[in-house]
Image (cartoon, rainbow, N blue to C red; front, side, top):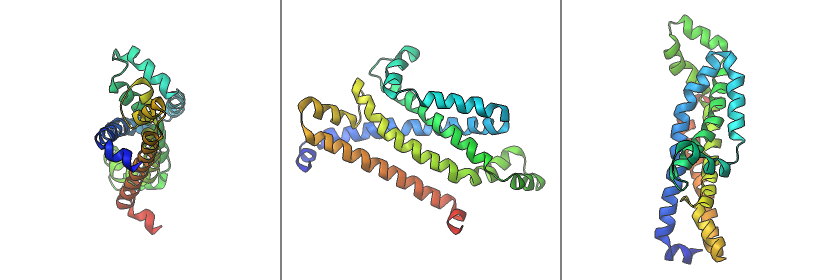
Length: 212
């Protein structure tokens, strides 16, 4: 495996960069979309179950089928990375919107009432009070979504889209074990590092959870 890395470090590095781009960009998009959706599901209680059920259906769609079907909807080429970014954004929203909603619903109503009595208006109360309290739940969902995206990007290699999954397909095509092992190890390491970063961020922004 070390020999393979030495001889093919440029190929592996490019695959790793593509994997990071395809996995993390949907996380940013999905997180930005999930925050208002999760808030709306809490703000208007009648929206909660329809939204959550819709997200559940979206997340149940097989990733490979979504990668192939999206070009028909978006008008993109089958091999366009946009298909993977959009598909993983959909999965991220499906995971995080419910997490955001559940995190906001877990905030003690007494705390909300106290903030309102202190003069906090809805937007400021959401940003300064409710979201910080909901952060542990939200970030737990973000960890799941991030690790899930890192693994799902590899499926894109089956339709010719880059990432570490290309090492898998190349290894299977050539009956060559080394690139498969390199792809697996790097995928696991990448997921572990991303998860650790989120944990460290959570510890930094929610110090009160450590005290508890």
